[in-house]
Length: 153
Ligand SMILES: Nc1ncnc2c1ncn2[C@@H]1O[C@H](COP(=O)(O)OP(=O)(O)OP(=O)(O)O)[C@@H](O)[C@H]1O
Ligand SMILES: [Mg+2]
Image (cartoon, rainbow, N blue to C red; front, top):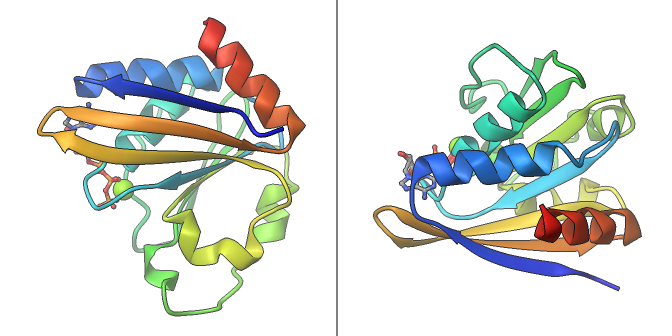
């Protein structure tokens, strides 16, 4: 069954903390899909995830490269597929999804046809200047477990 979890953050720091909590629960091969408008906080959330994975390098938006790799306790593959909105280009997604890192995809709705069977979707909505609403939704039982653990942290 699909699990969901809704939570609001009121500062960038709270978003960072939320992402770090999630990072503790992830394992090699996990895929996180991020949806939300421009400026919703997808990259901000990814920075927190990277910190939680022990990545020291600063994560910046990969808009011009589609994917950037960072090494940490687990490697992070950070994708921003915004530019693939009207394209059906496959940049070799499966190799990342089945690699031994964590994949995070901004604007994942644009590559829906390439997404793996299971993933954790996070939808971020702008509430006001400093408030963002996060909605986590699991696809597959592993991510339902992740959400249940996240609720308890
Ligand atoms: N509670 C909050 N959580 C996250 N970011 C926040 C929050 N409040 C304000 N912000 C601000 O919102 C902006 C979020 O920008 P960010 O680059 O993370 O968005 P994005 O979803 O990646 O956008 P894009 O689609 O352009 O890649 C930042 O300037 C950040 O400081
Ligand atoms: Mg971004």
